[in-house]
Length: 269
Image 1 (cartoon, helix red, strand yellow):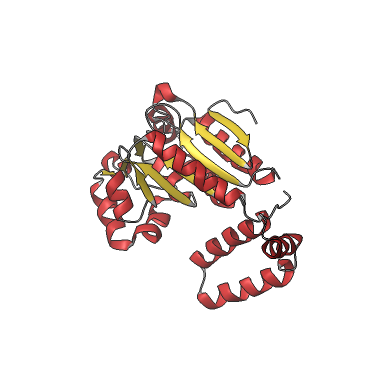
Image 2 (tube, rainbow, N blue to C red):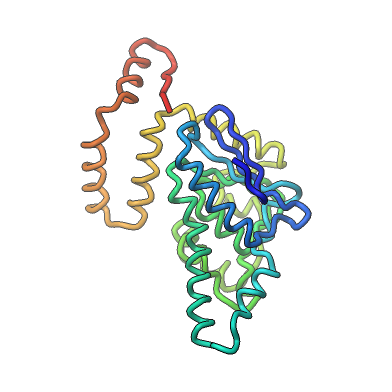
């Protein structure tokens, strides 16, 4: 699993994905956008992968979209305005698809955030299943200060994570919020004192998830995402269909046997 802008390793069921342009504060250039989509599609297909940790190399998680790339996107073909706008729409949809790849990956994604998490990086964090951060984490919906609306996922996901009113405050003002506030408003599950403590805590969480039934974990992620976007009645019906098809699994038999025999269950990939 080699990618130009990511450092990726796999051990004991956990995939570590680090944004790896530390000299550029992990700003997301065109290559990194493509690498992010590809790595999560590859992880989805990898049987040995049971949980994912997404972090940033160097001093920051990510400074967001690379400004040189943003400038190129906005310029487009000025001589053909209609073509320019249609092409811009396709570009936005493509970048949205990159962010959504975290949700489409069936394995739980844990974002470990330290330092800057700005603009497009916040979109990435919003799409993760779980967010942990360090006290020095600094989150900003920066797009409002650049004169446009955040367009690849924050507006759609953040209100469901922290509530509508707080999401509006942060979106309208573009004010930064640090790790302690991120925990207070429910954006991050935990805030650690240092990056080392953060990574240790995230590793322990990932190992805990990796020890569970992979089939049950994948089904749980599917149900939680479906429930977020559908009614209770529709979600209950989908749940019944899912378990009618998959409840009687080898994983379930192993879990019951391990409980009876007072041992740790061992699930196949």
